[in-house]
Image (cartoon, rainbow, N blue to C red; front, side):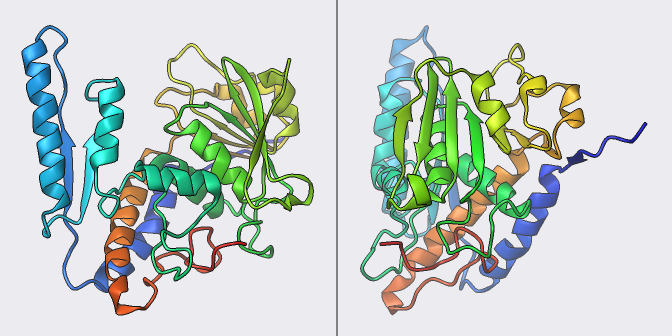
Length: 315
């Protein structure tokens, strides 16, 4: 009987490759960047405490926005797990938002706009950390075809993303489709299809509802499957997977059972360490963006040929 041919790739290997680039970029800075992390929570049994926390977090963010010694800000959500959190996301200065959650960053991501200043193309837009981490893993695995032009390097790939949260799943589907992939986005409400159209001729992705479709309809068509369903009860039905699929798990729980190694060609069981390095890369990018008053583009910290390399935006 032949041995299992599935290659298990650990997040540490991907993170280490990105750390080399990160260190090179940091060495070119005049001083190390300063990242402020804001951690708070609300006690549902104490309304007064919750109100005090909201005021304190808001004041802390606003103070950090104008503090020249603070390069970037990260807020650990959820704090209140309601619209108050959305408000806090939007008051972080876009020039210090390392998580890419500001409205301008989100708008650019969905509209496939890669620069904050499209005319001058000096300041790269920041992408949310977890979706970008998954993209960096796909680049590491050579799923991105560097022979193709920038922005089209997933052309020919079909990806199934099992999760459509506003934090990870939907942004990831949009990013992958904007880079040329055909993407099935699956959650409990059904299946959506993200694509730039036949021949990827459209500038940005469009979304189509796949009425009556289920996960089992998408898996046999997908050469890449990315899953991030919370809870230990959900499992990808591995018998429905396409033979030789590349599978990535970004949930804290394992969405793939042990039979994944009998079907997948590559399996990435976790991505946490890559997400942390991507956060630091975003911080470096923000510092580089702030130096654009010199009228020179920020130095790219990515390997040539990667999706985030500083290249002209697409028409």
